[in-house]
Image (cartoon, rainbow, N blue to C red; front, top):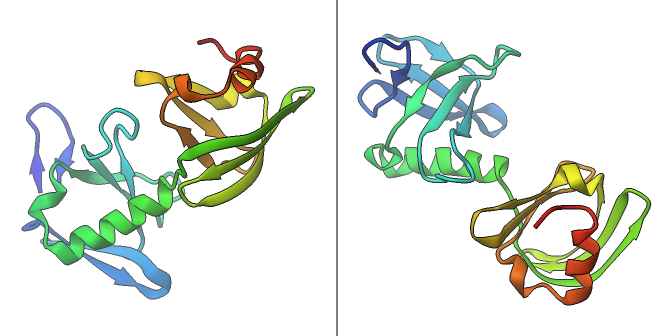
Length: 173
C-alpha cells in the first residue's frame, strides 16, 4: 500500500493486498500486514466519466463503508483477481442498454416504460422523471426506475419524436 504525500489516500497494489472469494460469493481482502477484511465492496470512483478508472475498496463490515484504499490499475492484479473485482463491479453497476422504446406513457409524475434492452424485454416505472432521468455527455440518457434499477439509452437523438416529446415535458435537453 502506498500513501500519497499530503493525503491519507492509500493505493492498493497486487503486492500489498490479496483478494479472495468468501462464503456466499463475498469479496474479502488480506493486506500484506495481515489485516483481514471479511467483507469488502468495490465502487468506481467516476462510474460515468471513467468506468475503467480508480476503484474504491471499502470495508463492508462497517455500516459507514470506510475506504480501505484505491486501485489505480486493475490490470496489475492477477487475472483471477481482476475477474473477482470486475464481477462485483458488474453486479453494482448493472445497467441494461435500451435498444428500442416499445411504449412510453405518463400518468401524473410517473412514466411507464415498455422497452427492449440488450438483456431482453423490460417493463418499468420511473417516478419523478426530472429527478430520475439524466442527460449526460454525448446524448446518453441514464434512467433510474422506482426499484433503483438503472437503464441507459446510448443516444437520445435516435428516439422517436413521440418519446422525445414525452421526455421533454420532464427533463431539459
